[in-house]
Image (cartoon, helix red, strand yellow):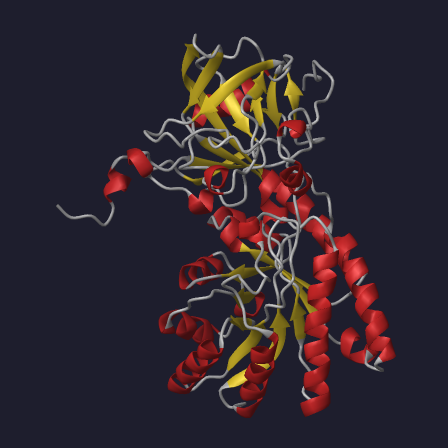
Length: 470
């Protein structure tokens, strides 16, 4: 194996992402060769990185031994990825009948599966109850009634958890905050207590097993988790004292962040609030340590430490498992120069059809010229995708400094070069579309030894017509 030809850049990850022979290397495999072999756009998934991320999340168990990790499959639910997650020893969270179907097909046992979702149909609830999953997280009093009705029809008991919204804010993106009273998720504290009482009144239909709250994605600080867990703990303690019922678990949700700004070369071009969020480094272990220490003091004071010790704590990491385990390779197909502005443009074959968050949330994915990874990235290029849509650009059209106006790449970047968009594992493949008649790309899984497996074949034009009639 060739040694690196230049100092390790900020985006590099030891034994995973690096530079060999001046080109991007993924577990020792030349990224440009992968692009030539499988075509672009191409999603490249690192199985070792998924396992590494899961192991890091499991460090939180040092602060509470009864920890259940459920991978948020909405982040990326390809069967090949679900297989790696399952084999790594954790469970799964789903949000629909389709995701439940995928989780079961990937080999998860029913008691390894929890279901979220704010608008579940009777059919989806029936599928979850029939399967006998770990729990259904209830999003409204109406949904409790619906579950009771379905359970009665099936003659089966449903395990349920109440999803609480407790007015907890974070320093994340506004659209990613899900525990505010203004969000569409969960039930208010007074409703939660009433729902729990109702659930206990119908034990033949439902088994009340837990409380759930999710403060939101990419949360940079531990304090919102502490506030959320404390709110759930107070409800649990009140319920126990009022009824004697012991909940089996508290679900703290997901939201553990990923550092999208390991390479800080363009960080100052991003608005300060976004920069804090995108560069967050909070770990699950740090969050759990502060949360458990705070709540334990309250529990001891209340004489209820045994209640806390007996709880299973559920977490729903998605982004933290998959985001930095995937690289999107895209080829420069066109280039142009604007004499009026002095700007140089590179047009790729991957647009927001594959990176929807880049336009929905102005999400930053670091760009590396994989064909010239060893060269200094000092030249400024406007990057854009192939779609016939003026919004299909790699910068903030509105000039709000949510994204850099240009990307730093080697000066001689040109047509044919392979650009790697890093940290593209979360909410890309799950949200991609065939807009402009562009078939879905292939996805490959790379192992530590450099072996490669196709886990999603590239779609054909015929696939674009699936289920259509003329």
